[in-house]
Length: 265
Image (spheres, rainbow, N blue to C red):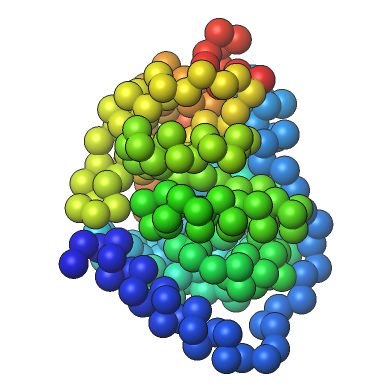
């Protein structure tokens, strides 16, 4: 089995168990914020800064992170949004992490998980998410479309994540506002930054938030993503391992957006 197949099998078990519960886990206290509006108000590349304790490919990254301190550093350093891993089995995150972060900051929070069912969207919204993730590699097209429509009906933004041309074609069927191009192959977990370059060329629509995900470490990586046509990058491991979050984020935020870049609002 691939990494993704193992994760989705486990997620199906979790969803089945969750549906047997007759109570909600959280009550939302924070407003819903828009990543899309924030990105298109910026004249520099935007950053979704991620809180990630561990991953299947890297193992432990920072298991003892103070998530509230990390989130506040991200916000103060100029993050457009914060991504919180909520998968417990493979990434050691939780919805409790999401709730804590969403109540501590005043920027959008992305629920980073393998969403396959409406109940996960409900839980993410109740825990404070403004954005949910739908991974095209993990969903049949009809299921993706239904979940996208359900999330947007709840007032949430949706990050539609793709890795190849076929997934991008499927994602565009819902006329999304936010496209995430994952440079990591979720079947092998190998990373190739050229994935962003190749796929952005196939996006004709202006006004999209286009995110380059995975492998973003340096200003040069951010410039590569910008030159390809992305206006946002998602940065996880690099910031989780950083000894100076503000300095490293400011270096990335110095990458300006050109008015002619694809994806410009």
